[in-house]
Image 1 (cartoon, rainbow, N blue to C red):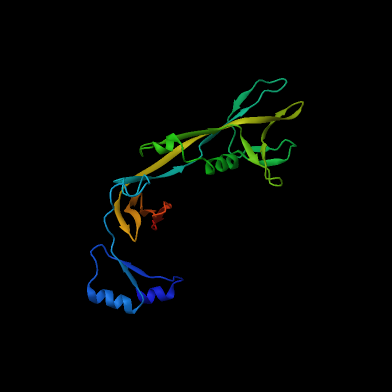
Image 2: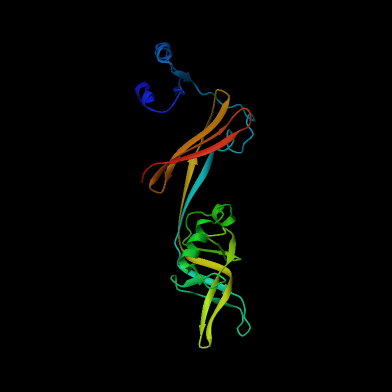
Length: 228
């Protein structure tokens, strides 16, 4: 451990043992400038977070969502009512000036990558879900030059000409794969800092979770994933 520490960009090496250290081990560590620490039990109510010293376990979830179908709501025009259009994924979408913006699939992928994960459906997912539906209005995109959100348009081709119709909403459906893992937690205190740690398998990957709270109330939650 000491030789590995010398090769890494670290300035302190601390050895932690829940069962303590022998006198010879402590002396050996002191000779090499290594600190030793033994975690202690957490006093009830000592820390104020909702995790450290409080939860028996946390649940971690992974979501794999694949675009299956896109539906676009387009506003009414002078000669056509508002309607819902199901475009091909490679259908072109345009800016107001008629310049090409992106494909329907690009819009859907961009929208899905920005979905707020703090929603009821994902929080309550149990792992047996097979399909998903998400929607957003207005269905805007970021204009490359200005960086501002702008409207998108679907081109309607008519014998009398091509018309742009503003897209007011996008809805995406497709297959969903949801994996849920329960991670039991162990709570300890080390040098005044409380921590909760646990490990489990999430699908085919190992995951380690550590939550901490310092005496001043600073908190953190870290997750480390192993290779599949």
